Picture 1 (tube, rainbow, N blue to C red):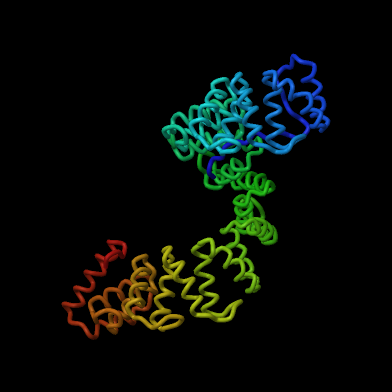
Picture 2 (cartoon, rainbow, N blue to C red; picture 1 turned 45 degrees about the vertical axis):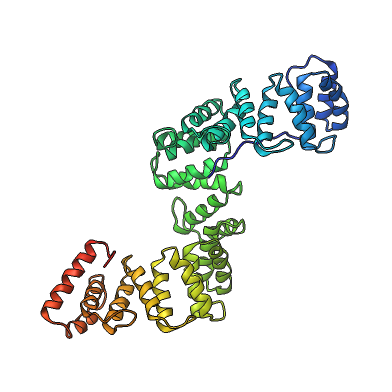
Length: 443
């Protein structure tokens, strides 16, 4: 998950101020706590105009959220600036965020860093976290992961959940610190215990994979569930997978289906693919096509292949070879060996495309070089017949031999051998050994 700058959230009816010295400020605070923001504006505006920093900050909040006044970012920035210049840390952090986003002011990352720094150096955890993100991304400062870690740590040690998550992420990725899964798990746990959904999800992954912690599917399920209930789509998908596979819980396809659906309906592509698979197993092919298509449009390779297959065979849709070719091509370009094989067959047979032996050979080679045995068989046949390539019995025998060594029927190898001299067979066998040693690349 990418880091996000923290936005200060003000709960309607509860606006915090520094210790107040003016009775009128207390009146405004009492009014705001009752939800009477118009009265709060009436009390605070004169104080703000007289230079009273708590009133300036709180008046800025009212303008920012449109409570008691029309929402006006320029006025909010004006009053935040007035308070920030007097050293109010909340105003400094809020003003930094406005410069960072370009709200009420021209976006200016250097000004954002200036105000975040002012607040961070006074101990504001929100500002420390935000300043860490600026250093991490190189916004308004030279990118510096070590300084990012410094500020994340300062905020995390104050119990700031987003900073704890960000610090966990830096340890997980080894950015600014040596990679340390134990420290990552420590800080993710701290954030997860405070309800940070990204930390809960990441901690679930760590327990599932045994990174930084002892592998424990039950704990993985617990953390996925915590995040899933907060609508984290990745956690919902992973929780669905745990139920589907019976990892950490009793296998339960209904609950797997429920969580896959929850994530899929939020647009999470992997869950859409998984949901398509469940519909396909249940023989609801139209729904399978629907969800495969949703995932395929988001470039999920397996969904693209399966959608191509369904169009090729007319399952859940009207048979359409052109659409099959479209989706096989999309998956093949992402490296799917089985899609490359099927695309080769489409060109070989002229289904949905103009028949083209050279294109067929191209895709057979792509799949064969990935070790896909059936593609190796087809490629051997193309060399044997001289289709799309010059006829070459040595190459035909080589690929037929590799096909047989990967569990295929040796019949083709024997057929080719009948047309070869002993010297040619010896050469073909040598090439086959070299090809396997090169992991089928460049054969």
